[in-house]
Image 1 (cartoon, rainbow, N blue to C red):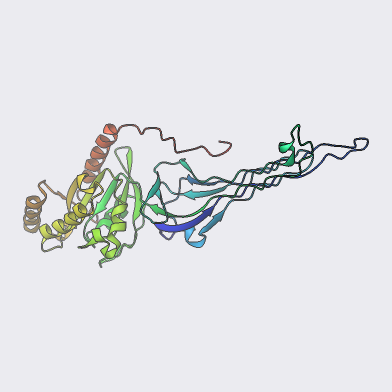
Image 2 (cartoon, rainbow, N blue to C red; image 1 turned 180 degrees about the horizontal axis):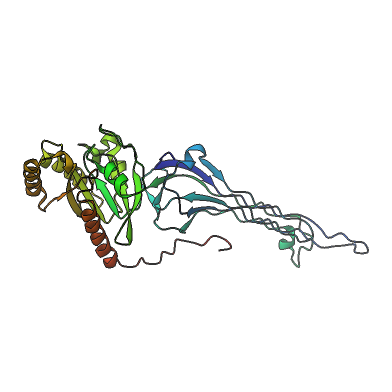
Length: 348
């Protein structure tokens, strides 16, 4: 499945149905009164968060969504039915922005969440509504109210427990493939990964989700290599696993480059728990390991872990460390407050 994390769509709710002008006609009843029914309300436009999606690719092929007009009123006091709603299915982590792509409308962060984007227009009154003591035979009815229309941006920020960061070709995809069922592209050249990947791993009968983003380069926080979009996918993670390749001659410089981009990007990334690991340890001898671990420890302020996704060295230790940090963060998290903006879908 192709990956798309940002798209622009046009939405329009349905117009309300028109009211009806009608008079009762029946044998032996000469002056039947008005019996025009009201029009039905136009259809609404909803966003619904569903399970099983991790891309907005469906919106690449259809960008316009219009709900149905309400049914017009009819004689014999028959009111029109409500127009059918349009429901847009989006993955967990979808954000809705105004047309300027800066003003946030809503942030959909859990499965089953629903948001009313555009409400359908009210139906018009039929002439039966206007009958009064002064006017027993009104010949007027209201047209339906027009629906709402707007352009909005949908932006996806993946939701995962742990995020993998590092320079290109640091071994992030190899690690993800070794601990999850994900099948990212792996090759011995930079920028093999061109879009984020998600995988679920299991350790000691517990599971958590890992997100792998393409490698960061200098200037990523300003959009170089669309790094700002990639960094957005690890904004929601609880812990970052920073991989520094053992094949780097200057491991301290490699660590500083990525750390600088994370701090410059902001959005709370620099405040996240970070675990540092020297990857591709199988390519190093004992002397090289000791020297590069020493250099890395001096610059990161913690004892780095050794990792080789190929030989499985350090894999379970790192997974347990990640799971411990994730569990601690989950336990410290306060339950979300109820948000009155969310409304149930009709009939739910």
